[in-house]
Amino acid sequence: MNERKPPLAPSRRLFVAGTVAAVSVTALAACSDSSDSSDSATGSTASDAEVTAVADGEAAEGSVAALAQAFYNTLDEDQQATVLLDYALSDAERWSNLPEGLLTGGAGGGMPSGGGMPSDGGGEMPSGGGMTAPSDAGGATSTGSSSSGRPGIDLGQLDDDQLAAFDALLKAATGTTEGLGYDEIQTHLYADDYLAENGGGDTYGRGNFYVAILGSPQDSGTWEFMFGGHHLAVSNTYVDGKLAGATPSFRGIEPLGDFELDGTTYNAFKTKTDAFTALLATLDDTQLAAAELADTYSDLVLGPGNDWAFPETKEGLQVSELSEDVQGLLLDAIATYVDDVSDAEAATILSGYESELPDTYLAYSGTTAFTEKDDYIRVDGPSVWIELSLQSGIVLSGNHPHTVWRDRTTDYGGTQS
Image 1 (spheres, rainbow, N blue to C red):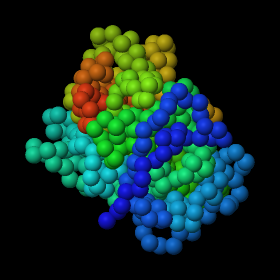
Image 2 (cartoon, one colour):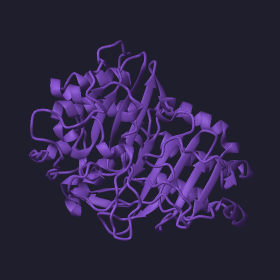
Image 3 (tube, rainbow, N blue to C red):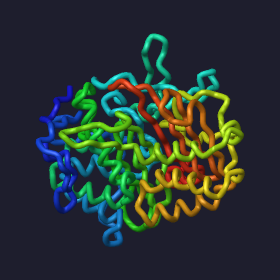
């Protein structure tokens, strides 16, 4: 039986990068993790085969690969063995929106939002890391590839120096846009700390988020920087020193809207939701009718466990029918996902999506205000796929969003098997 480690010290809620970030919070309450109290880390690998990946290959100074090596070198031998795995799609697919304790069958948390199915039973697979839609009795069955838990080590195992090295890695891999990328992730972690202190228990909180390095972080070959936990999946795949894919990228948040933690008010999802509601508000009645989907979607179509299952037929309003100004609003909304990766790489990806806008489709169901349960928004292009779905609260009352960004070509860096 696993023994729980002591809670994280208050100061360790703040990621540090050289110096502790200036955040106006004091006496942060403890955040516990779901790890074993032994010296060995608690992540798991797909097999017991000897790992051949290394963390000492050639890597450009200041690159994500070099910072991954620097983080790796702060770890002890057991932690290194947990964090660094050979690249395998089976491990890359082990992301989820569920908190780790619920994903692995541990205690704590609440019932995950199942679904993904249109309410008429239209056959979409559920999201939720392989969880089926809740039965009438309120149960759920774990069936997906994520049921074994996330690979890597949880942040609760790391000391301050290791957290500082991880923070530098995370900052380099994600964007600098205010309210997105690195900034959004920090607020996201505060939101999970808030859940831990407001009914979620020790299944929630930043100590339950996992980092893994799949493959050798260097300027040649394929490797992935993987970070995630409840409502968060960062899946950056690099090939020969360049970002080959930043998807699947999952974001969700509970609570939705403002929340206060230790005297500071946060709102982790405002930038994304504001961009999409502003876009839909510009559509006239004819355009709204064309964009509206026939089904009601209770969750994401392409959530965890539903890889490479892009619909063959696009639905909704073709973007070429919109004015240049409205197309610009759509591109701004797409950018709220693309800007979750480093700035230069985000600009390249967004330029590609912009060139494909005329053949991209915008669709929704429910209301366009994105305030009611089952409100749903979709962007489906030749490459880009984005979904937003509003769920019932799990730990708290009210609704909360699930969203995913995928790419028809570059999910998992293009690896399909």
